[in-house]
Amino acid sequence: MNKKQMIQLSLIIILLLTSCKGNKEEASIINKEAISSLENGENILIAYFSKAENSSSEEGIDALTSPSATTGGNPMDGNVQLLVQTAKEMTGGQVFSIKTVEKYPVSYEETSNQAREEQKNGSRPELASHLDNMDNYDIVILVYPNWWGTLPQAVFTFLEEYDFSGKTVLPLCTHEGSGVGNSIKDITSLCPNSVLSKELAVKGSSTAQSQEQVKEWLADLGFTEEVN
Image (cartoon, rainbow, N blue to C red; front, side, top):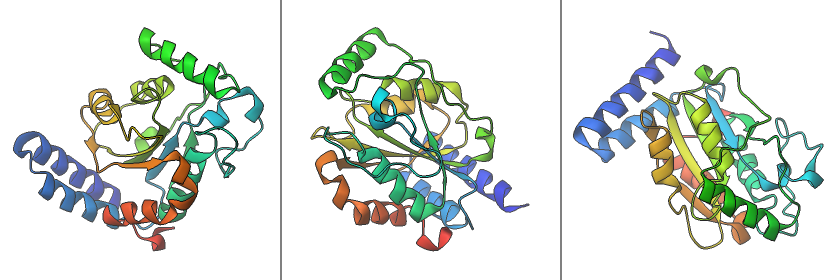
C-alpha cells in the first residue's frame, strides 16, 4: 500500500468514526496522523476566494503562484491572500484561486449589497477558474471571508462543482466580528461525505498579525513547516 492509499484509508476510517461513533477525539487523532505522514504538499490544495482578486480593479494578479499580500483599503481586501500565503509556507500546498466570470464592484459597500442579494436568491455565480485534478488532493484548506454570515456564494459554486468524498476540509475564515457564522454548517451540507476538521476564524483587522495563529492551528492538525 503506497502513501496516498494509506492517507485515503485513514480518511475513510475518520468518516466511519464520525458517522457511526461520533467520536471527535479519535477522529482528530487519526486525522493528525494522516496529515503528518505527508512528505510534501502535492496532496494538499489551498483553495481560496478573495474579493481583491474578484474585483475589476484587481485584474492581472497571478493568484496561482504568488497571492497578493496587500491589505488594501477595504476590510476584506488582501486578508485572505495573507492567510493563504501563511498556509502555503506551512504546508507546501498547491494554491487555487476561486474566480468568478462576473467581477464584483470595487466598492466594498456595493459588493456587500450584491453579496446579500446573491445569498437571498441562492445564486451560484459562474466560475472562471476550474480544477481538472481534484482527485489528486486528499486535504483541502478552504480560505474565505465571512459574507453575510456564511460563505460567499461563489464558494458554494466551487464546493458543488467537485466531489469532496473522503477528503479532509480545513476551513480558514476571515471575519469582522461574526466568526465563521453558518459557514461550517453550510460546508457540511455541501460536502456530506468529507471530513470537516477544526476550523479557524481570523478577524480581518488582525490578519496581518495572524501568522503565528495560523501556524499554531495547522501544527495542531499535524502539519510541520518541514513539509514544504
